[in-house]
Amino acid sequence: MHNPWHLNRMAALDFEASDKTPDTARIVSCALIHLGGGMPTEHRTWLVNPGVAQEPEAIAVHGLTDEYLAEHGMPADRAVAEIAQAVAEAVGVGIPLVGHNIGSYDLTLLDRETRRHHGAGLEEITGPLTRVIDTMTLDRHAAPYRRRVSATQGPYQLRTTVETYGQGNVLAWDEEQAHGAEYDAHKAAQAAWVMGVIAHKPTAERPAWVGALRNRRGPYDRFDDPACDIDELHRRQVGWAARDAASLQSWLRSDKAGEKRDPAAVVDGSWPLRPMPLAVAA
Image 1 (tube, one colour):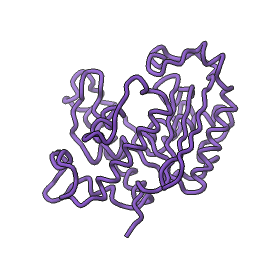
Image 2: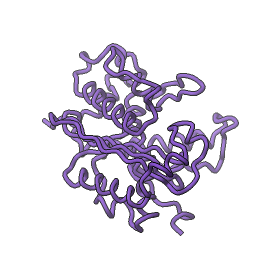
Image 3: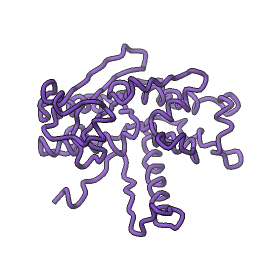
Image 4: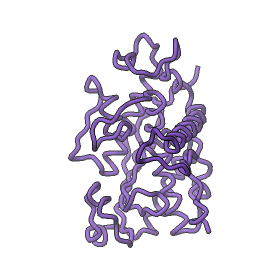
């Protein structure tokens, strides 16, 4: 019998950044929280002066202005070095990294920053990233076909995931605290724990709302898939992320996409770290 991954120590990682594209974004804040496994919770946070102007849309989300960061933030090169070293220490002792969209955004963002400031890719510093838990990837797999909550709240953004798995008041979402790296990292870890609890329960003992999901094909329930050890869970997420990207790419190239249709659309399914784009790498 495998050791349930959700009962072990995790390192929750989240960034706030200057824009939404990881290849160009700069880190403005970071939280790395070690929690679970029957040990005390440990918090590390960084406030970073990126040295560049942020996109207004990014400031609207996290509320950290260029002026505030210039006055209170650490120099970016020193902060990036400290963050990468802290992540490397967790990876080195086998603690899984957990976050929401961590495999498509956060780790790629950190990789680009270590290259930018220190001339080395993230895995050159941390070693291979082979234990990552991405609550967005897990949620998309276990609960597919979810619709948008509203025009402004997507089906798989962190708030939606937390509110979905918080049914029965297991989790709560505070919009006033949200979009800070520490709050978001902690909520992603809590959501991962709830997903692990559900996956490791017999089907008949899972919450009623889980049984009502459109995720079944005959007796098969997608929530059975995360019931494995951490190394197998990582491998499975690699496949799920690639499948989701291929599905999105196919949709974007089809007439079903309507005004979003792009016959040449390419969606990268690499996970948990995206390769350098050729234009950037050159």
